[in-house]
Amino acid sequence: MLTEERYRLILERLQSRGVVKLQELVELLGASESTVRRDLIDLEANRLLKRVHGGASLLTQKSTEPGMDEKTFKNIHEKNKVARLAAEQLQNGDCIYLDAGTTTLSMIPYIEAENITVVTNGLSHVDALVSKNIRSYLLGGLMKTHTKAVVGSIALQNMNQFRFDKSFIGTNGIDVKMGYTTPDPEEALIKRNAHLLSGETYVLADSSKFGEITFAKLFDLNEATLITDMVPEPYKVPIGQKYKVIEG
Image (tube, rainbow, N blue to C red; front, side):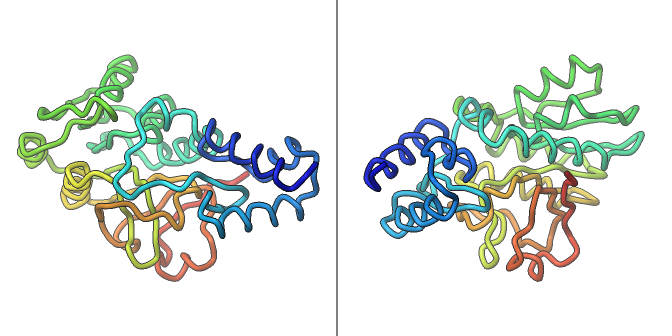
């Protein structure tokens, strides 16, 4: 297969899925790992994609926020493992904040702790929580149709009535200097306030988020415990001991 043909197939697969694994491309192209790696390096140099651990992802604008439907089908395997490990951090009787987002939504089926109370700004989350007979509060405020998240000043006022044992926050970017980031400043305010009102904060993210920077900062890497599938070496010092990695 010609190089140009491999490039076309790689970019078509990326456009349809957003993120692709190296092994997936090896099988798609019928090429060796070394050949596919060189192709990814060339395409990244031409600003057509971004290489991530074990594959590649689309380049995104810093202010672009993927919708719930789009995010639901990305990195499902890693996301579910991260969600399971996050749910294991809960203890009986905890009062927690559950951020809107697909990884935090994936936590809910794994919750086994009893007598917990959940506050959330995620419309989809409340439905899933009620289905499990978990005591739940939905923040009032402006509903974002794109991400089904409640944001704005009313939501902040509502949140300030609560205090949390733990909060579970999603992020769109993880960077050594810029910390945790998300595209929407209004969602960033909600996430940051939940962090400030919590005894412990956990950030849930698969490894495709490393190296990404979006528009609005949440907080620095060492301010919360990251739950992920893999931590690249350059991030281990800035994060310190504040991470939990899934096994297997």
